[in-house]
Length: 516
Image (cartoon, rainbow, N blue to C red; front, side, top):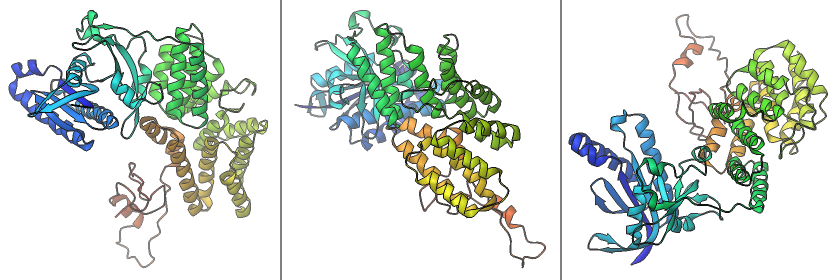
């Protein structure tokens, strides 16, 4: 007898499917095994029992069983999106840490019994974990648990009265931060009645909310955001939001806007639009902050006219009012407008942006003004540009996000005069994006931050070269410019490992050729 981590899985509706269409049931079970078995094996799990479509597996490592269960459900979720509903495989996974007995190829013990009872009360397509397993993998005393590669977020479902066990707290494990953020802490157990779980089996959990807890989450949220650890910042802001609602402290609109500001920085256009329509449009939130967020969102959505309208609403707002907890008393709406002006080649907008920047006294706006002034000059003074380049790249006191705007404008300038320097700046910009993303502890938000914001996409755009053929080519030779369009592109750069999703012919990260 020993303590270990137990996974109990079961396919929802499989018995009925066997009666309706046995051939389809067997086919789906084979596909189910092909998906699940390699993931269990990858994390050193061992399948110790099969009960029809159910699997019982054990893991020595608590973090591995968490990671494995999330990857199983995410893989099935991805698979189901590519199949009609009749071919969906919906799984429930119950996880527990407790005593088991393995004897004569059979598993027994209280731990096994509890795991087998957690699985049926799990939400369809979800993962439920016991209090004892939570204690093995929790991060501090937060609703955060650690897998083998990533951390994940949970919420308490209810306290359950299981057979042969005292009452036990069960938690819902979310596959990603956004699913956790969307879920109400007061509604997490509502699926139980839909799935036919008797009310007598559980009691919803009531946690005491204290003002000190509120202050702790606020301070941690600010601290993590200042470190650019955006996923943990969102977690603590959301916890503050939940606690303040329980304590009848009316700051919900403001906190929701702060969270939405982070989402807008990560380019999550549809999420920002949805939350805005559901919660903010009718609640009259802080108008300047709302305008700023919706302006960033419109910019990321390529809706530049609406972005400019939103940013223009901020032009007459005093700098002293435009603040967030972790930001200096200025905002980057002029930076966004500068990008739009130069993308559109809108001279009137360029002049308007220029005039607005002149009144600003902070270092970032002064440098932005210098970059814009260089862009408007017809002559190319290599020494002046080199000095400006060094001032932006090497100055550690400049806000890192502000540098990205200036890098894009410098790339636009250098593309006319010095293509090698434009590639060099692009490499520096991409490195900065990767460094900022590296501060984000959550995998999902990290990927969104790299890929979704329009500014990041612009900075990663391929810099086109004009290829000139040899003078000795005969009249019937195909021009080199046309040949390059037909070349096969690599999926990644062999020199630096850059993933070439956009089929670039030259690596935006290191400049290496990506065609053959």
